[in-house]
Amino acid sequence: MTIQWFPGHMAKARRQVTEKLKLIDIVYELVDARLPLSSRNPMIDEIVQNKPRLVLLNKADLADKKLTEEWMKHFKDNGIPSIAVDSQTGTGMKQIVAVSKEILKEKFERLAAKGVRHRPIRALIVGIPNVGKSTLINRLAKKNITKTGDRPGVTTAQQWVKVGKELELLDTPGILWPKFEDELVGYKLAATGAIKDAILNLQEIAVFALKFLTEYYPGQLQERYGLEEIPEEIGDLFDEIGKKRGCMMAGGYIDYDKTSELVLREIRSEKLGKLTFDRLHEI
Image (cartoon, rainbow, N blue to C red; front, side):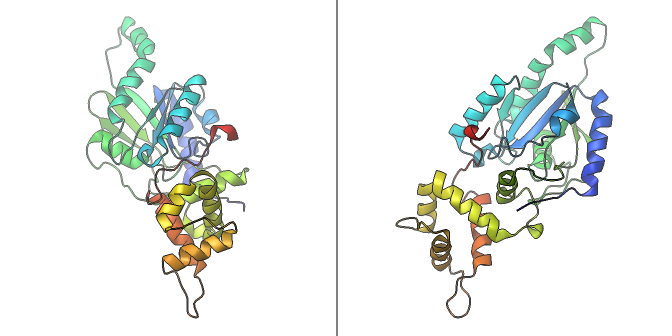
């Protein structure tokens, strides 16, 4: 399966980000804590160049905590500070400004020595669609500044947002790369909702997701669907889940489309527990 999705506003956003960099002190790279690698746009390094960066692992409350800690260590080992946050619950929000100040301490000391008065930190926030940028900004600003939604592509224009007296954020539309060279990355992004379902074959995505759960989270899979054991054949697993959840068609046949939608919906809403799809050994 090859997924290509690069709406015009994303190409425009990439140009705008590049143009605004000279105004920016630090870049907040927002990634999905369930996909710390797959949700990092490979163009980001090229786009943000040498600006100081802070990786925010959002939706941390949906991710496998142990693996989130492993990924944070990985980023630290590669010279990139990171924080586990959750824009829905507020987890980690207070750390963002404090860590940013530490990262920019030398820069602001140099500015002070030149007589430049203290000003708010100017941060650019970037990330792929549906990673939670708008919700994060609203949480930081403590009011609804930007539109939010559980579908990709809600933010379509740039805007500056004041966060108290210490931070100014530049929001950008989600930037997804034009084509996923690694098929596995496409499947992971699709399973967690980063790509519009309308352009996907949901049965293919559900097959990938169920195989992943069978390998890495079999206990959670069995518990959620009341399975005594997990069938070896993926078709049999579909049948078991379809029967137990009433995803049936006339004549007693399993409705595989309905079953696929059910599985993906429950993965995205934590009904199958805390999940992390990226593993360090895949690097």
